[in-house]
Amino acid sequence: MKKLKKNRIVILIAIVLIAVVIIINPIKLINKNKLSNLKYKENTIENIFKYKLAEKVIEIGYSKTLESALNSKDFEKKNINSYEKIDYVEQDDFVKNINSLLEKEYSIDEINHINKTATKEDVDYILTLEKEDVSKYLSIDYSKASKFKRYIEYASNNVLTKEEIVTYINIGLDNDFYKEYNDVTDFNNTMLVNKYNKLPDDYVPENLTTIDSEYATNENQSATKEVVDAFIKMADDMKEENLHIIANSSYRDYQSQKDIYESYEKKYGGKYAMEYAALAGFSEHQTGLVIDIANKNHDIFSGTKEYQWLKKNSYKYGFILRYPKNKDNITGYAYEAWHYRYVGVELATKVFESELTYDEYYVKYLDN
Image 1 (cartoon, rainbow, N blue to C red):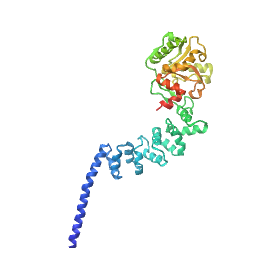
Image 2: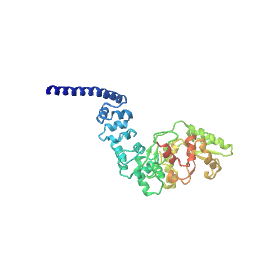
Image 3: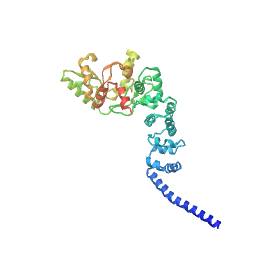
Image 4: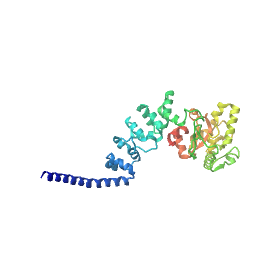
């Protein structure tokens, strides 16, 4: 009798287990299909079930960062809601870095900001700093995590606002001219060419057009067609106000710029050449977007009525005064009242209204 009763209990337990399996397996199968449809990989789905997160992950949807975390030895279940909001980047120890930043109470926005430009080494350095020392620079949307060490070092030697520090470091002002530079690869009307950004030696702009002799000191002056058209329109409009301008110097190729710099250096010395000329490859003139302007009497240009008009109106034609007065600490060049750079009407208007040098405007608004 006892044996029969025991057998009934075993059978009952077996029936219950079978029922549970019958109920659970379809749910697991359904969830597995849902996760697969969300584009999670097979090994990730296995980990999702291992961590008992199927319903949670299905609710979240697909996240590449979450998938990376789920497949990492550094996965922390408590951070799942943060993983889904963090932008994925290719970075060594990506998940470990996220965990460390979250541990130091960085926000999701701050972590995304850091990860946009940071390498593992950059993050390692940032994690050695007090959070408040990092967050003050993260509050500036164009700051770059890859430059945080330079921000900190520059701030220790200069009394500047945090915005000035970020701006000046992003330009490159903590480095010697021509020593540490970027290669310009995106050739357009907005490109930045200065003592920290170099054109290829063989770069020649498209659509180079000779400036008609009526508007130039000689028949060797040229610029891109768009620049020439804008310059002629501006010169014609100025004539109506009895003002007269001509192109005194415009496009120069690499070799021409090299010859000019060397002649300045030989005639006036290295300091003068550094202030008023550029090494070949670093000159805006090679872009075909620059015109050095004179009036027909070749007066000292800064003292002419033409200059006063251009200061107030050149942006309406797409030109900006590239090297303003008292900005040589930023531009690297002495004041040049005659040097006008074409960037297009819309951008020239914004630069004019900002009262910034183009170097400052570029790193703040255009350098993505």
